[in-house]
Picture 1 (tube, rainbow, N blue to C red):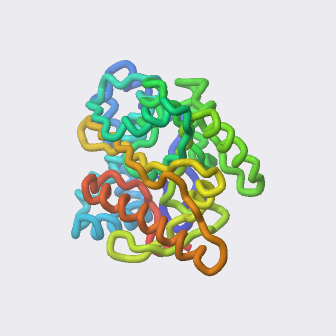
Picture 2: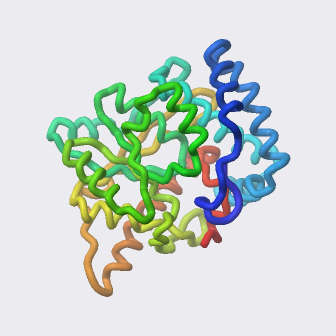
Picture 3: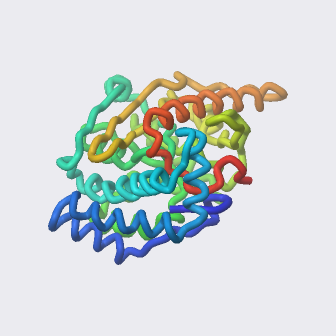
Length: 300
Protein backbone atom coordinates (compact mmCIF):
# COMPACT_ATOMS: atom_id res chain seq x y z
CA UNK A 1 0.00 0.00 0.00
CA UNK A 2 1.22 3.47 -0.82
CA UNK A 3 0.64 6.81 0.79
CA UNK A 4 1.92 10.35 0.45
CA UNK A 5 3.09 12.09 -2.74
CA UNK A 6 4.23 10.48 -6.01
CA UNK A 7 3.21 6.84 -5.93
CA UNK A 8 6.54 5.59 -7.34
CA UNK A 9 8.50 7.11 -4.47
CA UNK A 10 6.72 5.25 -1.68
CA UNK A 11 8.15 1.86 -0.79
CA UNK A 12 6.01 -1.23 -0.41
CA UNK A 13 5.12 -1.92 3.21
CA UNK A 14 4.78 -5.27 4.89
CA UNK A 15 7.05 -8.30 4.83
CA UNK A 16 7.22 -11.55 2.97
CA UNK A 17 6.87 -13.34 6.32
CA UNK A 18 3.53 -11.62 7.00
CA UNK A 19 2.25 -12.52 3.56
CA UNK A 20 3.41 -16.11 3.97
CA UNK A 21 1.48 -16.29 7.27
CA UNK A 22 -1.68 -15.18 5.48
CA UNK A 23 -1.06 -17.71 2.70
CA UNK A 24 -0.49 -20.53 5.22
CA UNK A 25 -3.65 -19.73 7.19
CA UNK A 26 -5.65 -19.46 3.98
CA UNK A 27 -4.38 -22.84 2.80
CA UNK A 28 -4.98 -24.62 6.09
CA UNK A 29 -8.16 -22.95 7.32
CA UNK A 30 -9.58 -21.19 4.28
CA UNK A 31 -10.28 -17.66 3.11
CA UNK A 32 -12.62 -16.80 5.99
CA UNK A 33 -10.00 -17.58 8.64
CA UNK A 34 -7.37 -15.58 6.75
CA UNK A 35 -9.87 -12.72 6.72
CA UNK A 36 -9.50 -12.35 10.49
CA UNK A 37 -5.78 -11.62 10.06
CA UNK A 38 -6.54 -9.28 7.19
CA UNK A 39 -8.94 -7.31 9.39
CA UNK A 40 -6.13 -6.76 11.89
CA UNK A 41 -3.80 -5.61 9.11
CA UNK A 42 -6.41 -3.17 7.81
CA UNK A 43 -7.01 -1.78 11.31
CA UNK A 44 -3.25 -1.24 11.75
CA UNK A 45 -3.08 0.83 8.56
CA UNK A 46 -6.11 2.90 9.52
CA UNK A 47 -4.64 3.67 12.96
CA UNK A 48 -0.96 4.10 12.16
CA UNK A 49 -0.67 5.18 8.51
CA UNK A 50 -1.96 8.78 8.40
CA UNK A 51 -1.15 9.18 4.70
CA UNK A 52 -3.32 6.19 3.84
CA UNK A 53 -6.11 7.48 6.07
CA UNK A 54 -5.91 10.96 4.54
CA UNK A 55 -5.94 9.78 0.91
CA UNK A 56 -8.80 7.38 1.61
CA UNK A 57 -10.87 10.16 3.16
CA UNK A 58 -10.20 12.47 0.22
CA UNK A 59 -11.43 9.85 -2.24
CA UNK A 60 -14.42 8.71 -0.16
CA UNK A 61 -15.71 12.26 0.29
CA UNK A 62 -15.71 12.62 -3.48
CA UNK A 63 -17.37 9.32 -4.28
CA UNK A 64 -19.64 8.82 -1.23
CA UNK A 65 -20.05 12.34 0.10
CA UNK A 66 -18.80 11.18 3.50
CA UNK A 67 -15.67 9.64 5.04
CA UNK A 68 -16.14 8.36 8.57
CA UNK A 69 -13.46 6.25 10.22
CA UNK A 70 -15.67 3.21 9.58
CA UNK A 71 -15.82 4.14 5.88
CA UNK A 72 -12.03 4.42 5.76
CA UNK A 73 -11.62 1.07 7.51
CA UNK A 74 -13.98 -0.65 5.04
CA UNK A 75 -12.05 0.90 2.13
CA UNK A 76 -8.66 -0.24 3.45
CA UNK A 77 -9.99 -3.67 4.37
CA UNK A 78 -11.35 -4.10 0.84
CA UNK A 79 -7.89 -3.39 -0.53
CA UNK A 80 -6.28 -5.87 1.86
CA UNK A 81 -8.84 -8.55 1.00
CA UNK A 82 -8.30 -8.10 -2.73
CA UNK A 83 -4.53 -8.39 -2.28
CA UNK A 84 -4.97 -11.58 -0.23
CA UNK A 85 -7.32 -13.02 -2.84
CA UNK A 86 -4.49 -12.79 -5.37
CA UNK A 87 -2.82 -15.60 -3.46
CA UNK A 88 -5.70 -17.90 -4.43
CA UNK A 89 -5.99 -16.66 -8.00
CA UNK A 90 -2.33 -17.04 -8.89
CA UNK A 91 -2.72 -20.77 -8.08
CA UNK A 92 -5.83 -20.97 -10.28
CA UNK A 93 -8.09 -21.59 -7.28
CA UNK A 94 -11.36 -19.74 -7.94
CA UNK A 95 -13.53 -21.87 -5.65
CA UNK A 96 -13.90 -19.21 -2.90
CA UNK A 97 -15.33 -16.66 -5.35
CA UNK A 98 -18.52 -15.85 -7.20
CA UNK A 99 -17.40 -14.61 -10.62
CA UNK A 100 -19.53 -12.95 -13.29
CA UNK A 101 -18.11 -11.95 -16.68
CA UNK A 102 -19.43 -9.13 -18.84
CA UNK A 103 -17.96 -8.57 -22.29
CA UNK A 104 -15.84 -11.72 -22.59
CA UNK A 105 -17.18 -12.06 -26.12
CA UNK A 106 -14.97 -9.15 -27.19
CA UNK A 107 -11.80 -11.04 -26.27
CA UNK A 108 -13.19 -14.27 -27.77
CA UNK A 109 -13.78 -12.47 -31.05
CA UNK A 110 -10.22 -11.14 -31.06
CA UNK A 111 -8.85 -14.62 -30.32
CA UNK A 112 -10.81 -16.15 -33.21
CA UNK A 113 -9.31 -13.56 -35.57
CA UNK A 114 -5.82 -14.00 -34.12
CA UNK A 115 -5.66 -10.33 -33.11
CA UNK A 116 -4.01 -8.93 -30.04
CA UNK A 117 -5.14 -5.84 -28.17
CA UNK A 118 -4.13 -3.34 -25.53
CA UNK A 119 -6.25 -3.47 -22.37
CA UNK A 120 -6.54 -0.31 -20.28
CA UNK A 121 -6.71 -1.34 -16.64
CA UNK A 122 -6.90 0.70 -13.42
CA UNK A 123 -6.19 0.30 -9.72
CA UNK A 124 -9.80 -0.75 -9.36
CA UNK A 125 -10.61 -4.10 -7.84
CA UNK A 126 -8.28 -6.87 -9.04
CA UNK A 127 -6.25 -7.09 -12.21
CA UNK A 128 -4.99 -10.48 -10.96
CA UNK A 129 -8.38 -12.11 -11.50
CA UNK A 130 -8.39 -10.81 -15.08
CA UNK A 131 -4.96 -12.28 -15.73
CA UNK A 132 -5.51 -15.57 -13.90
CA UNK A 133 -9.00 -16.27 -15.24
CA UNK A 134 -7.97 -15.35 -18.79
CA UNK A 135 -5.20 -17.94 -18.62
CA UNK A 136 -7.73 -20.50 -17.35
CA UNK A 137 -9.94 -19.76 -20.34
CA UNK A 138 -7.20 -19.70 -22.95
CA UNK A 139 -7.14 -15.91 -23.41
CA UNK A 140 -3.61 -14.93 -22.34
CA UNK A 141 -3.32 -11.50 -20.74
CA UNK A 142 0.10 -9.99 -20.05
CA UNK A 143 0.51 -7.04 -17.69
CA UNK A 144 2.79 -4.11 -18.48
CA UNK A 145 3.78 -1.99 -15.51
CA UNK A 146 6.23 -0.83 -12.85
CA UNK A 147 6.77 -3.65 -10.38
CA UNK A 148 9.58 -2.29 -8.21
CA UNK A 149 7.12 -1.17 -5.52
CA UNK A 150 5.66 -4.67 -5.23
CA UNK A 151 8.82 -6.78 -5.03
CA UNK A 152 7.81 -8.51 -1.78
CA UNK A 153 4.32 -9.41 -2.90
CA UNK A 154 5.65 -10.64 -6.24
CA UNK A 155 8.17 -12.80 -4.38
CA UNK A 156 5.30 -14.50 -2.54
CA UNK A 157 3.32 -14.96 -5.76
CA UNK A 158 6.42 -16.44 -7.38
CA UNK A 159 6.59 -19.06 -4.62
CA UNK A 160 3.01 -20.06 -5.35
CA UNK A 161 3.47 -20.06 -9.14
CA UNK A 162 7.03 -19.90 -10.49
CA UNK A 163 5.65 -19.05 -13.96
CA UNK A 164 3.92 -15.85 -12.80
CA UNK A 165 6.65 -13.61 -14.26
CA UNK A 166 6.06 -15.02 -17.74
CA UNK A 167 3.05 -12.71 -18.14
CA UNK A 168 4.69 -9.60 -16.70
CA UNK A 169 6.42 -6.98 -18.83
CA UNK A 170 8.43 -4.52 -16.76
CA UNK A 171 8.50 -0.85 -17.75
CA UNK A 172 12.13 0.21 -17.53
CA UNK A 173 12.26 4.03 -17.38
CA UNK A 174 15.63 4.34 -19.13
CA UNK A 175 15.29 1.37 -21.48
CA UNK A 176 12.42 1.61 -24.00
CA UNK A 177 13.06 -1.90 -25.36
CA UNK A 178 10.04 -3.15 -23.36
CA UNK A 179 7.92 -1.68 -26.17
CA UNK A 180 9.24 -4.41 -28.48
CA UNK A 181 8.10 -7.05 -25.97
CA UNK A 182 4.63 -5.52 -26.02
CA UNK A 183 4.61 -5.38 -29.81
CA UNK A 184 5.71 -9.02 -30.06
CA UNK A 185 2.99 -10.32 -27.75
CA UNK A 186 0.25 -8.34 -29.46
CA UNK A 187 1.50 -9.58 -32.84
CA UNK A 188 1.13 -13.14 -31.45
CA UNK A 189 -2.55 -12.43 -30.78
CA UNK A 190 -2.19 -11.89 -27.03
CA UNK A 191 -3.58 -9.14 -24.80
CA UNK A 192 -1.38 -6.67 -22.96
CA UNK A 193 -2.90 -4.80 -20.04
CA UNK A 194 -1.51 -1.52 -18.74
CA UNK A 195 -2.71 0.83 -16.02
CA UNK A 196 -4.22 4.07 -17.25
CA UNK A 197 -4.67 5.86 -13.92
CA UNK A 198 -1.12 6.56 -12.67
CA UNK A 199 1.40 8.88 -14.29
CA UNK A 200 4.66 7.06 -14.99
CA UNK A 201 8.28 8.06 -14.60
CA UNK A 202 8.21 9.77 -17.99
CA UNK A 203 5.74 12.33 -16.61
CA UNK A 204 3.61 12.32 -19.78
CA UNK A 205 0.17 13.36 -18.61
CA UNK A 206 -2.81 15.59 -19.11
CA UNK A 207 -5.39 17.02 -16.74
CA UNK A 208 -8.99 15.81 -17.04
CA UNK A 209 -12.11 15.88 -14.83
CA UNK A 210 -12.42 13.05 -12.33
CA UNK A 211 -14.79 12.84 -9.37
CA UNK A 212 -15.49 16.55 -9.22
CA UNK A 213 -12.02 17.98 -9.84
CA UNK A 214 -9.24 17.84 -12.38
CA UNK A 215 -6.47 15.30 -11.94
CA UNK A 216 -3.48 14.14 -13.94
CA UNK A 217 -3.88 11.02 -16.05
CA UNK A 218 -1.13 9.49 -18.16
CA UNK A 219 -1.03 9.83 -21.93
CA UNK A 220 1.53 7.07 -22.46
CA UNK A 221 -1.05 4.28 -23.01
CA UNK A 222 -2.61 6.16 -25.94
CA UNK A 223 0.76 6.93 -27.51
CA UNK A 224 1.61 3.24 -27.18
CA UNK A 225 -1.70 2.20 -28.75
CA UNK A 226 -1.14 4.62 -31.63
CA UNK A 227 2.34 3.19 -32.24
CA UNK A 228 1.07 -0.41 -32.14
CA UNK A 229 -2.05 0.29 -34.26
CA UNK A 230 -4.04 -2.23 -32.29
CA UNK A 231 -7.54 -2.26 -30.78
CA UNK A 232 -7.96 -0.90 -27.25
CA UNK A 233 -10.38 -2.22 -24.64
CA UNK A 234 -11.15 -1.31 -21.04
CA UNK A 235 -10.95 -4.18 -18.56
CA UNK A 236 -11.75 -4.11 -14.84
CA UNK A 237 -12.14 -6.89 -12.25
CA UNK A 238 -14.45 -5.27 -9.72
CA UNK A 239 -14.80 -6.63 -6.18
CA UNK A 240 -17.83 -6.58 -3.91
CA UNK A 241 -17.72 -8.09 -0.43
CA UNK A 242 -17.69 -10.76 0.68
CA UNK A 243 -16.59 -12.88 -2.31
CA UNK A 244 -17.96 -11.47 -5.55
CA UNK A 245 -15.91 -10.43 -8.57
CA UNK A 246 -17.55 -8.83 -11.59
CA UNK A 247 -15.31 -8.76 -14.66
CA UNK A 248 -15.98 -6.14 -17.30
CA UNK A 249 -14.50 -5.74 -20.77
CA UNK A 250 -15.71 -3.00 -23.10
CA UNK A 251 -14.46 -1.54 -26.39
CA UNK A 252 -12.57 1.74 -26.19
CA UNK A 253 -11.14 2.25 -29.69
CA UNK A 254 -10.68 0.04 -32.75
CA UNK A 255 -7.50 2.00 -33.29
CA UNK A 256 -5.95 5.15 -31.83
CA UNK A 257 -4.69 7.95 -34.05
CA UNK A 258 -2.78 10.81 -32.44
CA UNK A 259 -2.29 13.77 -34.79
CA UNK A 260 0.88 15.79 -34.91
CA UNK A 261 1.11 19.48 -34.26
CA UNK A 262 -1.24 21.68 -32.24
CA UNK A 263 -4.09 19.11 -32.21
CA UNK A 264 -1.94 16.45 -30.49
CA UNK A 265 -2.46 17.59 -26.90
CA UNK A 266 -6.22 17.99 -27.37
CA UNK A 267 -6.51 14.50 -28.85
CA UNK A 268 -4.61 12.91 -25.96
CA UNK A 269 -6.67 14.86 -23.45
CA UNK A 270 -9.91 13.67 -25.07
CA UNK A 271 -8.80 10.04 -24.86
CA UNK A 272 -7.74 10.38 -21.23
CA UNK A 273 -11.03 12.12 -20.38
CA UNK A 274 -13.04 9.25 -21.91
CA UNK A 275 -11.05 6.75 -19.87
CA UNK A 276 -11.39 8.79 -16.66
CA UNK A 277 -15.17 9.03 -17.16
CA UNK A 278 -15.45 5.23 -17.35
CA UNK A 279 -13.24 4.78 -14.28
CA UNK A 280 -15.47 7.25 -12.43
CA UNK A 281 -18.51 5.21 -13.46
CA UNK A 282 -17.02 2.08 -11.89
CA UNK A 283 -15.88 3.96 -8.80
CA UNK A 284 -19.43 5.10 -8.18
CA UNK A 285 -20.75 1.57 -8.76
CA UNK A 286 -18.09 -0.05 -6.53
CA UNK A 287 -17.00 2.79 -4.22
CA UNK A 288 -14.70 0.74 -1.97
CA UNK A 289 -12.72 -0.78 -4.84
CA UNK A 290 -10.50 2.19 -5.81
CA UNK A 291 -6.95 1.58 -4.59
CA UNK A 292 -4.83 4.69 -5.13
CA UNK A 293 -3.69 5.41 -1.59
CA UNK A 294 -1.73 8.58 -2.28
CA UNK A 295 -2.56 12.23 -2.91
CA UNK A 296 -4.19 11.55 -6.26
CA UNK A 297 -5.68 14.97 -6.99
CA UNK A 298 -2.61 17.05 -6.15
CA UNK A 299 0.15 14.61 -7.06
CA UNK A 300 2.91 16.20 -9.14
